[in-house]
Length: 283
Image 1 (spheres, rainbow, N blue to C red):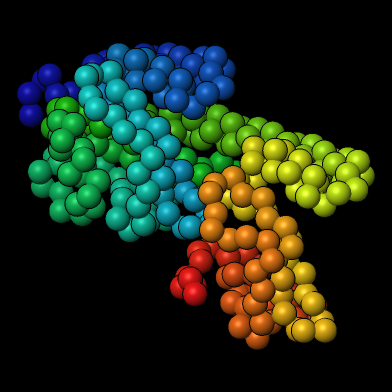
Image 2: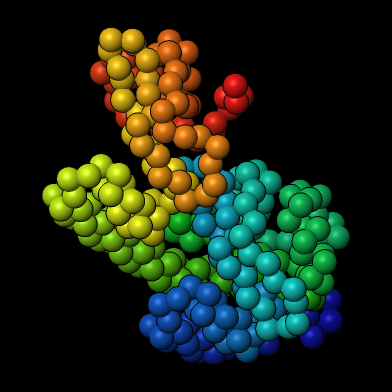
């Protein structure tokens, strides 16, 4: 290995200074994309880094999502990729809580989808460290280089310290986003209550809700389906659609033929239902 492949950082003092600069970057940015863009500019002074990435674990789907990737070299960067845990190095790191170091990408057979994208960007070595706080395991932070064998044991230890600082920043941003989302939902709930109190016409109420809800609860249709006990059918009384629809008010379906992912089985009291996908064929 030639001398140029070693980290440009020569002293422990330089690494401590770099960690202080990481802390400064964290304090200066509330946007994660901007933070990682800043880190991609600062870190090469002390370690061979051309790409810095953030992958977060989605607990609802149990997948890893590439939240952001930033570079200090020309590259066609595309974030948003989602992968099963065992198909990405970030997922392996999140599960094991141990870093992954790949000194030569050409010798790596695992995670073929991810490594193919890396090769397209000219990456030859990378390492991934956990992003974990005392409260939760958030995801992983990746560092990649155009050089082979760019990272040694000392580099990995340093980047783990960077990851610990960044984890706190990411956790704070996510908590803030959750608080804003909860605040907006409570505000919307108050607006819905006010709308119900101010409208006596059900059609006007649904039209008003159709204007208020999409910012928090995306939808294509709002409808009111009522049970007619004398004929034991479900009747569509009102429909507000944000897209053209072939369904019209007045549509009736026998209760026993009403699919769970259509108007719902409500011939007897039941809890609310969430349908992820409508699999019923149109009649």
